Length: 191
Image 1 (cartoon, rainbow, N blue to C red):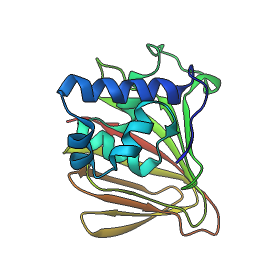
Image 2 (image 1 turned 90 degrees about the vertical axis):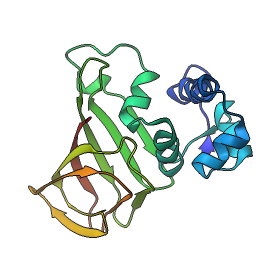
Image 3 (image 1 turned 90 degrees about the horizontal axis):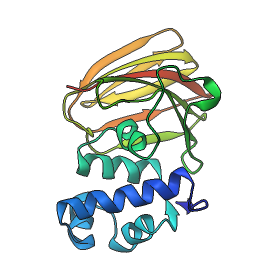
């Protein structure tokens, strides 16, 4: 995890939202720690905005709260306009894992679909322990490079121009074997 940014940043708003989600459920930090498999001290620092979550930790939090990562990140952004210029698309980086996530078509409470652009550095891997929302539909279209995606124990090698589609009900794993980074479009449709 990396040190959080100033209080008006996306990380600070995310920290406040994570805290409010726990409070809404009436959970203690200890209870959330047990549910998410993240230490109590880490959760406390996340909620105070002292740390920015890694992709893995944020994925665990999304699972516990029954949200896709995009939906959680949307909750800390202002109401998205119908047209989102590239310069205005929220970008979230996990420098530790080499993952960059651009919310191309941000989620909206009245819509079930969204479009995300993901980039993984060569050799980078990101694992999600569970589906954030069981049965969420995903379509992954590789724009450049190659990515290995493991879903339900099956490894799919997806190359430039290929599209993998599935309903996610459990863990998933993304790995960029290289030699170049992979860039892909992820279309998410909530059940």
